[in-house]
Image (tube, rainbow, N blue to C red; front, side, top):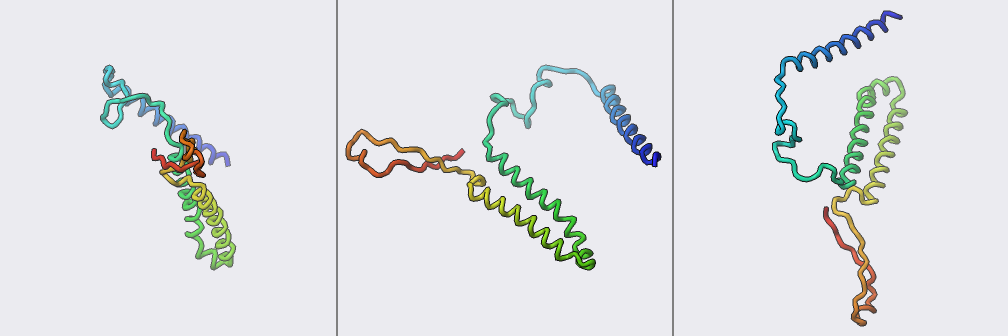
Length: 152
């Protein structure tokens, strides 16, 4: 029993030693001549323009999170699909199929919720109230608000 732990410790020590050895070897071999231009931020060969602390639209994060949720769904479903034939042979096929159906149904319900909220639209609707004009004929207009489409 103790021997298995010793194997883990030996491999952990060997991994740490190898990383430290490679970092030290790299620092000995590579040239060290820092210049002002070399120490600047490099972004795809372009000169840096503006500040790096800008606000990104939250919709990018929402779409990325939704993608990750469905990507993880595939990662959870794949092992079940890989052994599903064996589970059917063992008599557990209906149970596994029901669990997968419930799992997918919950995720599809979440997708429908996000879709109906409009979080997947790139062009959002912004309702801007329309102020009544100074003209008395236009001020009696029943139109109180309007919809303006704003693209980011």
